[in-house]
Every structure is written in structure tokens, then in C-alpha cells.
Length: 435
Image (cartoon, rainbow, N blue to C red; front, side):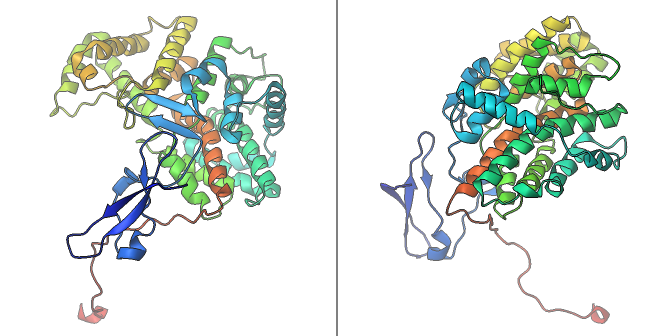
């Protein structure tokens, strides 16, 4: 990075001013380099939640929240979702360019070749209670991959990193499906090389040994789009966790497990589940006829009623992923004949009102990707408990790409946030008999 401009920080307490370089990215806000501020002033900066702090330099994903834009390696998400499948997007995120036909074929063969898991993993899974949350299982089994694949844990070796990346992308759908099958008491399904990435997920989750499984192409494409739209999203909480864990030198499987743990939080990966719960509650209260009453409560700040699945912390315009997911939602409901289903009728009516009501439009509270993806997954038969697991399957390529980028940086350092300490200063110890 080169700096042509500087910022000057002055102090009202008489401390000398400090000059700091300003760096300009390809797009987006400039950044002020504050790395030397502590050494020069003895002071830290204070930024809870890191909302104004660029913690890394990255070439992978960019979001313009004001314009409602999301790009992977320079390609708008709308273009990728319309013209690529998930594995092409995986290749792009990992290696920086879209694959040629030959590269695409080799990459797909590599992923399919690593999609099976060690047979002893079956015994590991059987150690969990049947009613264990699938995310708890996924956190454990992904971290446990380091115990099975010692040959690719050298993080300083680019080839080891490449193999680990392919392995985790290939194996997490298999492990996710195994966690689901275990929870419902059904036999595990092996991946099949003749199926696409998304179709394989569906046959491993819903196929039975008593009959052949024929993937529905509309549903396969819908799942593939879900995977693409959630593949990466800049420096969010789980991605930052993966980078922070990786900065310690932890193996990639441990880092991805840390990311899954963070994604499990309801404020991060549980948003689509919260949307569906809201719709189910509306259905219990009377369905479509109660939407007007519900909207009135949402507008009343004192009611405590929240409209889930609308608006976004980053996007101040329409979430570009939501536009694509909306199309997919209607395609799936039409394919399955569910437009008249009570739950989906509520969802579509609520969507219509929110898109037309000045209260929501003026506040830019548009339906986000979580609103539609929850509806789509429910229609496809994916249980609510698996929503966040599916999110993890999608986001894994983003996490491992970000991890690899960070490890490749020559001046990479272990993450060490600082604090504003407001506790007791040093105080006198009093023996227990005198307290």
C-alpha cells in the first residue's frame, strides 16, 4: 500500500500532533493507518464492535451498502448467481479468477474426490444424543477433521493449504447431511459423483436406501443459488473470527469450526430461522387476516413487536441477494404448488405490504435475503434446525478463502485487540480472616 495523503491527529491536552498515512482502496472508503498511534502517543483508539476499523486488507469481497451492491472478486453477485454454479463461485473465491472449462472440470473432480469422510467419523457422530442441535454436532465434527487429516495441516505450505481448502469445502455438506440423518434416525447417505454439488446435498439429506432419489432440478438450482448468495460477505462476525483464530497459527479445520460457532449466534446466522418463527406465530394468531394488526404493532415503538427479515445492518438499500432470492422463492413455491399454503400465503402478503407501505419504504426496510431463504428452505423440506447448518455449508468457501488470504500475507500478525480498562486500579489485598 502506498500513501499520498496524511491525516493529522491533534490533542487538546497539549500532547504533540501525530501524522498518519491515508490509504486508498480500489473502491470504498479510504483508511487511516493508526498502527503507530500507541507507540507515538501512549493512547489506544476506541471502536466497540470495530464498526469504523479496517482490520485487514482483502481482495475477495466488497459491499457497498448505500448502493446495495455485493461483488465477489469484482463480479456483481447478480451476474454470478445467474450464470454460475456454486463450485465455479468457489473456484473464483479461492483462486481469484473464474475457471476455464478444463479448470472447472479438474476442480469439480477434486471436490468430489474429497467428499467422503473417514468411516470412523460415523462412530464419532453416534456419541451425540439424538436430540443434539445439528450446529453443535457440526462445530465438533469439523474441528475433528484435524484429527483425521494430518497430512495437510502445514499452514506455511501453499499446497497443504490448497488441499485443506478443498477438503473442508467437499466434506462439510457430507457431515451436515450426516448430522441431519442422525437426528432423524435414518441411515447415512454417501455422496455420489454423478450428481452436482447441490444435488448431492439433497440426496444425502432426503434420499432413502429403499428407493432411488431423483433430484428436482428447480429445487437443486434454488439450493445452488442459496449457496452462491451466502458464500462470502466481507468481514462479518464469523469471518473475522476465522481470521482471528487463524492469526494464532491454528489449523484450518479449527478455524472453520470457530467460524461455525460464531455463525450459530442468533444475531448472525439465525436470522432466517427468526423470520420463519415470526411467520409461524402469525399463522397461529389467525393468518393473513391478522397481518394488518401485526403491521400496526410493528410501527408502534412501544409494542416491542419486531418485523424480522426486513432491513440489513450493512445494506441501506435493497439487499442485492434478496432480489435474486425473491425470484427463486416464487419459482420454488410455483414448482411445489405452495402459493396457497397458509404459511407461504402469509409470507407473500407480508412481503407485498412491506414493499408498498411508505412506512417501510421510506425507512428502506426492504425484505432481505434471510426472509426469502427461510421460506425457500422450508418449502424444500429442510427443517428449521438445519437452516444455520446450510448457511455454514455455503459460507465455508468464504471463510477458507479469507483464511488463506490472511495466512499468505507476509506481514501477518496475531490478532490482539486492546481495551479501555474501567475496573479497579491496583489495591491492597486483605487476608480472608480480616475481610
